[in-house]
Image (cartoon, rainbow, N blue to C red; front, side, top):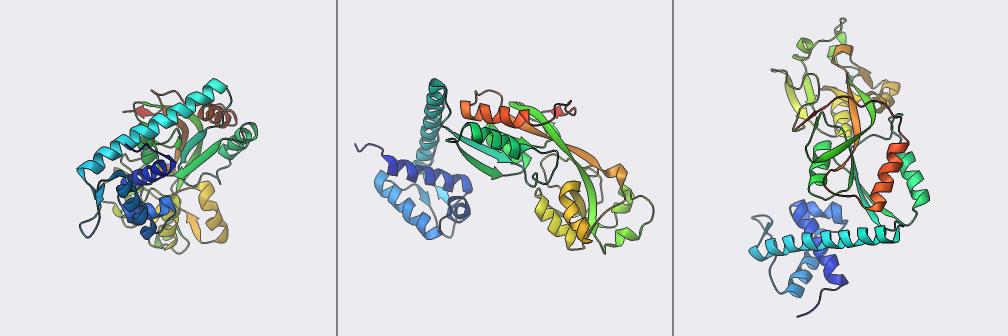
Length: 308
């Protein structure tokens, strides 16, 4: 029986990415490859293993029975490799490892966010460590942490999940915004939830609702997004009213393209946490990065949040 070599590992990693993405087309961005190249590499893997791993065609992407077994074995293999690498780091007491960090979007403009400073301090101390960073919404990051796909996450969740550890870092103010020509600006009094019934709203689109009007009935939820930039595009279209962080919206306010809606009673604070899996010890590298990010943020009491 032929032994697994480095080429096999690379192809198996490609296979896992395809499955996690839901198919060849969806995996193109993640792998930074053309679909034809991905298809060729998958054919190479199937030839090397001597089995068909997946069906692809008009009926869509799906795993064969053998493919599902190979996918499970591959996940176990890479988990074991990651564990081995982490243990080597701990034995050497020097981090030459690899960290997977996931963040929510558009944090860099928040003056309270000092993640970049923490990363700089960490990289100065551990220049050989490699870091993979991705942008996801908080729910996706939490699920990736629970599934062991990332080690550290920066999340903003009103409901904290069992099995995860949350360390408060900073917060941001979320306010309602509209385009400069939006008809809601004709209302002179402070805007209430009742006033918003007349206008299309950009909803947050999360599994658990976080805005003050998320549970309000009869709102015109004609659009939704967990992404701040997508929300900004919808607001700037002149059609929608929606929430944005005040630090992020300020660029369009300064240009006169966006206006903060007079609705102070509907503003809210969103807390951000450095989030990790509670039941698994972090690698030395991830532990040091966690300490670096935590240490550069102001120590103050975290807002009280619920857990599920």
